[in-house]
Length: 323
Image 1 (cartoon, rainbow, N blue to C red):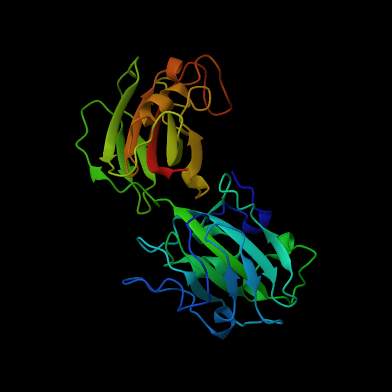
Image 2 (tube, helix red, strand yellow):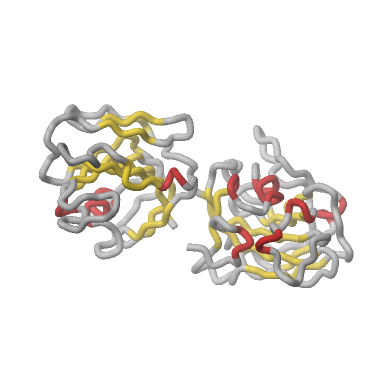
């Protein structure tokens, strides 16, 4: 899921458009209604990054370049809603040593495997600040002080503890933090779903016997891009065992919400649980889907440490984007 060096320990994201870069302009994330956590300054404004968006930039700045707090300047403007800390993004990133100007590491800029990460959980603290209020399609020049750059555990040998870091970030895409579609009226006999403040679902099962065929119902109808067979869907999900009389009945066997990071699943037979392939095909980004998978549509007679054999599984899935 991530190809970028473990510098972004989470999932990193940014990549392609097309625009020539001539210099720095303004601060990052100057979008109406959003207050950036990092401002442009003399240091970030001195960084140039020539080349089209989504291609490896030729970065130049006077060395040594040091800052006491994060600075971020917009090199190429983006568009759309400002990014929030809870969103996962995909990006191309180049890191350089602020003392020497030497390149430290970068993503591969092929567009086929962009780095992905949730802004609010990325280990490079300065990027958390720099990306809030930024926009998809934006190229940022970010100057990071040592205390907010690459953590010591992941610091390459080409960086010392006293080196600032310059990052050039192309934000290729961003995904919803939670399903934002229109609420739907649910039918009777289905599990009850209550959402926490962050969108995390809690699932309560009926006392009835589980259905013997696949059932799919939308809790929210999104209006974003359609997920088609073979697509990669970016999702958050919680799964519960429905097996009356078994000690595991009603227990959560897995949930992406526990890590805070969405999951990329290929909506294709053999790549994802069969019932989920059917449930997700044709859904739109922004939807929240309740899927009840009988054993034949789940794991059948197989068992795991959290799922007994021949169990019906209940999933609540937020469709956040197309990968």
